[in-house]
Image (cartoon, rainbow over all chains, first blue to last red; front, top):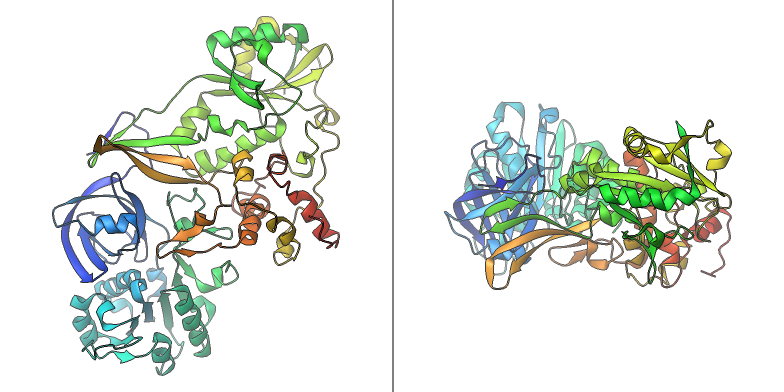
Amino acid sequence: MAKQKTTVENPYVPKPYKILEFHRETSDSFTVKADMKINHDPGQFVQVGLPGVGECPISICSDSREFIQLNIREVGNVTTALSKLEQGDTILIRGPYGKGYPMRYLKGNSLLIIGGGCGVAPLKGIIDYAENHRGDYKKLSLLLGYRSPDDILFQRELVEWKNKYHLQVTVDKNTHGKFCYGAREGFVTDALKSMDISNNNQAAFVCGPPIMMKFVIKSLKDKGFNDDQIFLSTERLMYCALGVCCHCMIKGKFTCVDGPVFRYDEIKDLEDG
Amino acid sequence: MQVLRLEKKRLNHFLNVVKKGFELIAPVKSDLVRFSKIHHAEEIQLTKNSYFPVKEYFFRKEETLFQFEGTRITVPAYEAKKRVFFGIRRCDLNAIKNQDIVFIRDMGDPYYKAARENSYLLGYHCNTAPSPYCFCGSLDLVDFFDLMFFDKEDHFLVEVGSEKGKSLTEKYQEFFTDSQRLITRNEKTIPGVHRLENKDISRFYDHQDWKKGADICLSCGACTTLCPTCYCFEIHDEVKTADPVKGERKREWSSCQLQEFTRVAGDHIFRKEREDRFKHRIYHQLQYFKEKYGVQMCVGCGRCIEGCPTRIDFVRILNEMKNGKTENNG
């Protein structure tokens, strides 16, 4: 455990946690379950790291007080180093940070969850949360888009989701005609367009690549959704996660403290590339 | 506030005595004027403001956040050297005030806090603008100091600004006499430093004149390094080559003017263009910080202009936007 020479709380210092389970999702992504027992909202994130390698922000994709799950894609130094870990290994984590999805204020609504690629990870936190608070929400609709059948995340959970909720998986191209949970070929926006859905008592949650989010928002607007019914989770580079280092600023907003979840009307005028 | 008098010929004696109880930091002329540890008070020069701001003594260029051996973490004791700073100008004092908001009030950074709590800030009032690029008069600067020295020919009037300042004057009371007067508003005004006419830039975001600066920007980051208020940083790990299990996590100054500043995994860069980065710096200084903390971050020292290798004068660019001049002479 951390040995501190002073009693001042140091916000930069992570704590060690054991990996309870390491599960490979796809060829370039995996899900880690760590024994971190914290209260958090879906959509919040933690800084995950390894000594000597560094830290990176990862959103929590579970809803439990007993552990956290982190879905991680191997794209940088830290995530590649993390991909080499196994059950029983120790990782350094600090957090949770940021504002998550305002689930308590959305009671009584149906939830429309639209994710693209690794953007599905923070949204899984909502799915788990809604399952734990099933009486609070009406219908759950999941539209999850991936590049190919090989990129589909959370395959362990998908069968259950298919049985319980309205689930539509899309793949940009079904290269080898593989079964993928009733997936249709095309973009997630196409699936959204053909969906019979209104904005009545409905909140939409969108996370994915910037270009996908842009088109999904447009489709949602076409369906009659108001800006304040749409919640986005944004990605930026973060070092401190404390609202100071400035890397994650979107104009005047700090993604790490004001986000990463924003209601669309809060940030629609802030696009700066 | 109480105003004391110190005879000018006794200043060096005073500082040399202070030096016995504290580490004394003041502007010294070497290659450039910079804040350095003083060995003899005679080294101090007060004609020019320092080229580098004093921020590096509080928000250090590099800070060890903790040491690790595997996943075992040790946090070093926060440095607590007692220091007296002499010769800080009004702009730089306000810059410290603004960084206090970020590092102490907002976030509680233990390293910054320890350095600040153990420091005494002795200001030196500018009777004239020390640089042609100064524009502190255009910004809403306030009195922020422990002691402020007003240069009056053969003596200094020393305004006490805090309990800390008061304790110093009591400790070294043999140097001070009561001045029997107050510092007037007029005496606190610095002439010729009202260059920035355009302070509300909210409606200029899409103005074509940003190109005047962006087109000649080299993305070197000198502006943010020399800025007394800029506070962005990055965090990285350094391991010992002989024993890679051991190492340190460090915080180091960074710059929003560098392209990789907003690079995320998968190589997407949010502010890829120089113009976006140039604008971000100016908007953070004049608008975003104010939206968040109620005060403009920029203090008008002009270092970002003086130290820019292509002399991008953002003050002139903003004034020309306001006045509708769009000829490309940036």
